[in-house]
Image 1 (tube, helix red, strand yellow):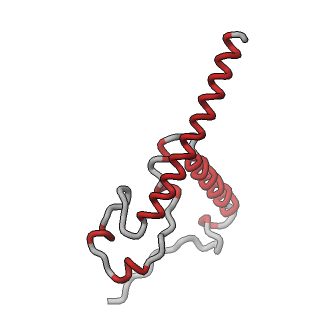
Image 2 (cartoon, rainbow, N blue to C red):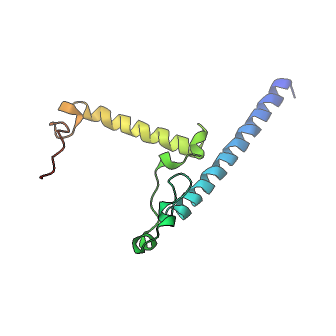
Image 3 (spheres, rainbow, N blue to C red):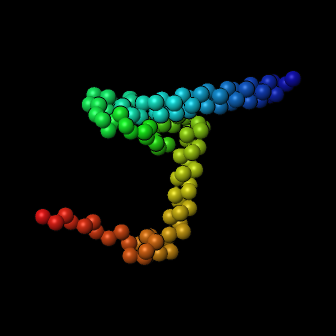
Length: 119
């Protein structure tokens, strides 16, 4: 086996190991975000834990966004980073389709100004 073949085999082995570790981080992070969503976590804070109420105990686990995956997103090749890229590409494709309308909105009238509250 030549030196080049040895290096290529080592590179493939390390890439497989990296994918495995990233998948573990992704799975553990998913579990943590699901388990801690009711009372809080290190990313969002623990306000729900400090002030429990009847509504907190009745809440189902909240869905979290891909952007909430701080640990997985620290690697550009993780499953979460791929999800985020796919979401961004989908949004770009959607905005390209809307460009033909005035103001980029589907109605053709633009976003407009927000309504003022009646005093």
